[in-house]
Image (tube, rainbow, N blue to C red):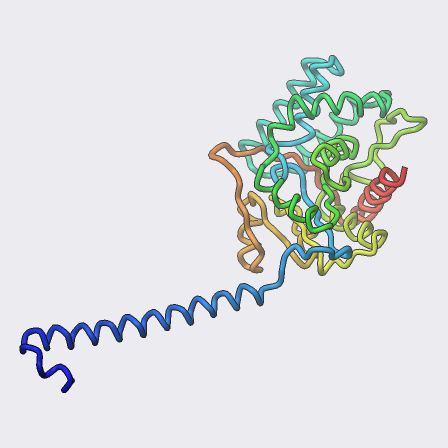
Length: 309
């Protein structure tokens, strides 16, 4: 500080403190820059996801409360009732099932079985083409406005990366196919209702695509499409879909129920929540693990058949 001896004592003291402050600021700036550079390097080191051009990767999305608020089966039922497909008594049955799911927040096997039987009895004897035509109108009326924008953006990210995106749902495959097409997705895996000569018999092929059956469907489709499940992603709101989420390399819990949220945190899965204060209702139909493979295989085969026609 000898060079500052010509200054008065007060000014020399102030200048010394200024020099010290300046040096401290410079050192802090240098450290901050190093931290920022380190963060940038870490971000660059993190693998890109989804990976652009990775044709062996795909994404699988549950439908109810993951892609769309509420249950597709219920919305479809409302549309069919409006078109005088069934009676007020049957509509009340649908409404009660929806209300129960909203209040209970769980998927009870007895109620799921009831929902399945209701749906099958309604479509028995009707032409598949008839329901497909009505399904397009029903989507516009009851479903289009219920798509979660956040989940839609996730699906679009996979599409933009050149990957295929599939819906995987317990809803009828016809309804799921319409929704997938309207969203610009690749296709849909859904519950397959038996038809003969284009007319519904009122029976299912295998069991509803639910729980373990979804995992079987994804495995079957991955095999047919030469996909590497370790590079694929799956998205769902329900703990019932843990089997499907567990077989992919990138599992996401979307608007998760309590059990799925807990499981996701325990296993370090990614979480996203796009819900408002209003709770969305759940409709799903459990299938026993023993018949899951049959239902999953039927769903995968049906999905591939529709794509190749």
